[in-house]
Image 1 (cartoon, rainbow, N blue to C red):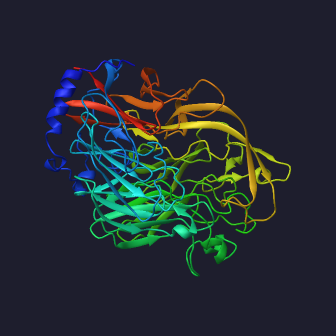
Image 2 (cartoon, helix red, strand yellow):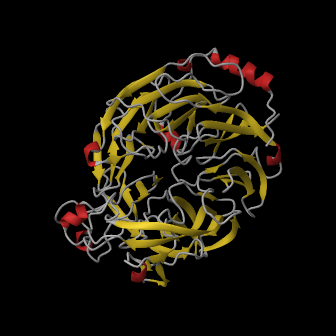
Image 3 (tube, rainbow, N blue to C red):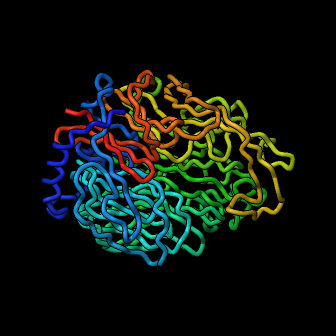
Length: 565
């Protein structure tokens, strides 16, 4: 990686920008602009509502990406007494006051940058659990910092923010939706969205659709997951959706042993979904049923609507269709991954599609208008928990011998799955769907017959025993087979799991198992450029002042790369 930066130019630009107070910049987003994002923005979790993570920018491309170098780097610091910025290129930034909110007293450790940044009007919004920063997207200097003092809870990660007009929304681990001013970071309101006493915790980046702020919440015990829509002005609840039956007469109840099992059945919602503006459908994935491993209390049925793609009417929260990727799951193989909407072809005819790679190791193609199943295939070869043949609706068929067992069962994948929550990508140039994959194995043991267990698992232990390595896979959705597959060095797994970006410059950005951010040729997979920075989130791209940037988080630091002119 070349680190030479035209610091004289950068410092002069920074000095000029610092002279402008944050309030002097527009920092506002019309929700209609998310339908057709501008080149100088990344206005929502996946860049646009299709969740393809495809940038239409072409300045950085296969012919010149080798000349890309570091434009700026900015280290972030959490806590109410944190200094502004924390370190980077250029002169020291002006003093920035941290706005402190929250209903608790705890300042939790900052954590890593795992979620997606959004960028609007030259300002980038970055999160870790309990923290939001606004950075100048041209040089990375800090504009404001907001800290939420927490009651505690699980601080595993935060997936990012949503934006509506002049306000920013984010979830807290102790289950609040918070709205702050985009210009200043000053809090506008906060609303509790789930019961902290029931051990819910919230990680999802809010998705703004019209006048709806859509948020998801989960629980690792035995409570139901939920998806909710809130009014962006007032924070008032508009609708609430549970992915499991909650009362007599609810659809899907006949797939559970009884109502008590269903209403404590999980289906948690951990990451954002995609939105189809033509049908007004919000399409997202749901988590595994609980107890995750021992299913005797759930009954022998499919346990709807866990481990499913679900399409809701965004105005009402009513379900229009579903497709279950793991009926009666017994391995914690949730399907809470972000799906991708594609206007493609099927059997030579135009078709509105949704593509998803599930944690269980299978790749699915579904008609997004109706939920009709079109294709199921393996993303990689190792999954052995299901039969080789699918059922009549394209579902993998569970092998009972791979369930919980006193003597242990060797299963692929391990608990973490072939894929996990980091977002995939799709390129309309190549017609390929891209995902990271890990081929892992674990021994699944039944340690107790008590179905209550711990952490919603049902008293079952798991021991990871090995890996065949990790891959970058480019799937042809027409055939369900990889167009190409790159195996990263080593067989211990890990790495290569932090999300992807494709661009109209025929590029695919990914990170490998050794901590490199790599630019690949999207058609062939050939590596063209790399930087060793240990990324922890998915990269994204935007244009400012006629210059294209590629940005990514790594631990506590933001990195921006560009072509030096």
